[in-house]
Image (cartoon, rainbow, N blue to C red; front, side, top):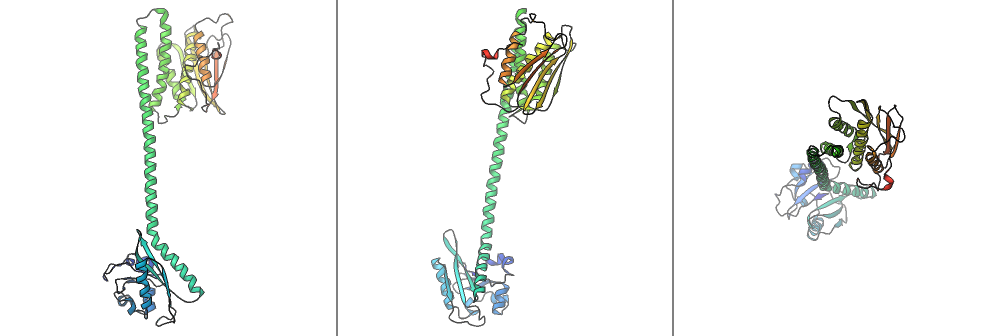
Length: 391
């Protein structure tokens, strides 16, 4: 077989010589011809052996000087290059020096819509040689297509890598935007809390408690957005860190350094979506504030914030070792609005609230809610009669 590029310069640089490692040891004859006189530019060992000449004797010699008669074959080669149509030729009789080489198959090599060369395969007679012809043709075409396929694979890989990089960049940009927005929300809430603190200094005593409660609720939400702005997981909130932040904020605002009341956190590393983290934080804030204000008339005690996973649910517990549940009829008004808020926030978590305790034995409030986000969750502003349940 051979490749014939459509050039007229007999001294043109060999194409197949660059692929010599692919053809030098091939069992079939491979040569490359160029020019109008079909001068040999490359010949492998099999062809040199076939014509009983060395490579130095073959290179630069016209093809028809090596094999004779080949006039009809050369005409077919010129016709294939000119028309781009495949052709074949079979000699009438076997000729020397290679009596088995009497049949030629030719087909064009095309690129960019034009014929740039041709392949010529010299066939031996008999069914075995016909099979070898088909195999040889497939192998040669595969070798010629290898570079094209490798280039296509590399191009696809480059495109894939570019798409992956772009996707990662979009994800990074989205996280950075979320963190930036959360940081700004936290700053704005902190400003609002500062304005409330300034208002507290100028208001009358009966209104101070309400302002303080409002300030604590705002700071609980600010703590949430502070966590989001510092977290690499902007799609979820680490509840153990959130509980510790709430405990720290409430300890600073309600207790002070000399207080005998302590707030401790016992929480597993669980995460929750930011939408439900808001009512979660407000719920913890209400329950903890209520315990600090009403459970310890003696000024000494412990409030424990616990969070554990139970199956597909989370269980939040706010427990104190204070005076416990007051006797019926002694449940005054101080915690009434807080009770309403607790019921609302528990409903927004799609949780079930259970309160237990007795006089002198402390109080425990447990809320169990699903880990996965459920559809149709109420917003913070949703207040319905069903949500107002005292405790």
